[in-house]
Length: 498
Image (cartoon, rainbow, N blue to C red; front, top):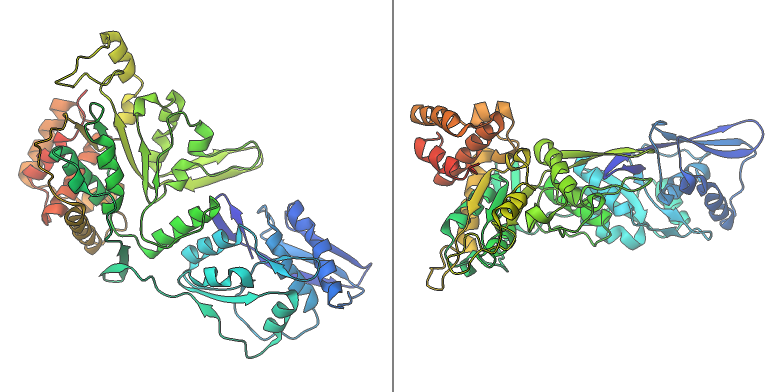
């Protein structure tokens, strides 16, 4: 079986011992109340089918013993061990068994089963599972899963006793557009309900959005109200790089944990919490058991903060850890859970409280002290984690439409393929120091320019690394292996000036 630790499934071996002694039925292995109550449900279900308990001491062990387990779906594996204690079961290999038992022996589904199977499939690649028949068709949709459905405890017992079992319902492949680079397969959609062709003008901002999508670089757009910041960001989701099978399973698992019907379409998540959201809702928390937050639900996708300076100060400062480390740890009295937070952070903001500081048609009503106080809500360490910064002008009716989403997406896919062909295990925006030295070679002219920029703009070590990553993505969009002076100059032009 398995149990959830945060958002990840942890494998649990369910073992049984039948010893002479005073008859009893015990469960050990750091099980919670839901599992301890399994004893009564298992007894009632077995007695319903006329099973006679042996006059032995029955001990159920859930291994590993130091992992807290929860979930009523442990009923079925426990009942099978008791029911088959005297049978010679043929070697079956590894089976995962999930199901809650009714008092009449019916096998029921719980909300966590699907999330567990998705997590296990992402970790192991291929697995065989016995699940309630009511969800077997959904489970079979997961690629790499052989699913056996059982409606009652008797069905499960018969399934394991048979030497020739019925063929499992196997998960098929994903019926989506696909690109292959060696053994890596990427899936994507070619549907664009929101199109970049709707955005007039703003070529610099759209160029920054293209670079951000191709390398998963953090993006901040600043401009007057109505200039197109949100329009660009909402269209960014549809031109992101293809998703691998692991990415798709991660997304479906998080959907299941959120209580939504999981989908397997290769469309990356888009989370946009309101600026009044609490810190616990954004980062996860809870008084007892840690709960998942928006930063974890945005894993493999986009986290969008609109009106960035209006978010609480502690929320903005706490955002630094998941942006830098791509993971966040939530500590509680009874648990300590680590979530992956590999998302593309995108934000939009006005230049001042009234929003008209950059406007050519409206007068700014803010005092200099109000503007400074507004800017000071964003600390330099947070802004240093932004790869691309664009200050947008107002749009005009006569501005051209520019490229559409389809053409931009094709360029992103081509850049993604170049990154995979180089042997990168992560996109350019996620390269560590070793990866930067290996995959981001600078031409001699570019090296000279970078040295001058470090002195002139007082770039930090983090800023230098980000400039090189962005330049690498720009070179990939141009189909060039070596980063030239022109690529580096464009990357520097997107750095925020103090």
